[in-house]
Each structure stands twice: as C-alpha cells, then as structure tokens.
Image (cartoon, rainbow, N blue to C red; front, side):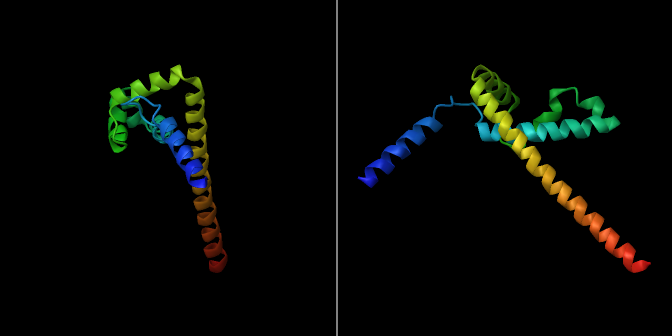
Length: 125
C-alpha cells in the first residue's frame, strides 16, 4: 500500500512540474536570473561607464547565456508568468530570498574583514 501511495505522489509531482509550457524557463531559474539582473543593475548604476550600456538589453545576453537561455526565452517566460500572477509572486519571493542570502554572506565577509583589521591594528599598537 505504501508503494502505491509513493507512486501516486510521484506521478502527481511529475505532472505538476510538467505544467510549464515548453520553452518557458523554470521558476527557480527565473528567480536566479532576476537576482543576478538586479545585482548587475545596481552595479551598472554606480559605474559611469557601465551606466551608458545598461539601458540596452544586450548587456543581459551574457548573463542569460550563462543560464542557458536566450533573450527571447526570457521575455516569453516573463510574459507567461505575468499571466500567471501566483507563479510570478513565487518567483519574486524566491528572488528576494536569493538576494537576502547573498546579502548575509557579504555582511559576514565584511564583518570578518573588519574584525581581522581591528585585530591587526590592536597588535601593532
């Protein structure tokens, strides 16, 4: 009986995962792409030279290529998820979690670096 329940559960999960149309980027991958795009936009906004180029979609092509996607797939996926607002809300939540996780890592590195600097300053005095 347990085996049948597990098989039925697996079938349901596989069916649910297959609901995204072909060519549409998965929610998880969309969240990761969006997080990287956000970080790139923040960097580009602070760098004069990059700011000039950041107004074009061409700057995102290498990022999308790194995820194995094209600009057309990305835009088609955005359109698809905008029509499915629940899915888009999930993507935005996942994006936020990714960014918060990265922020925590960066803050830990900053704190460790500040502590290391303080320790070496105290020794030298």
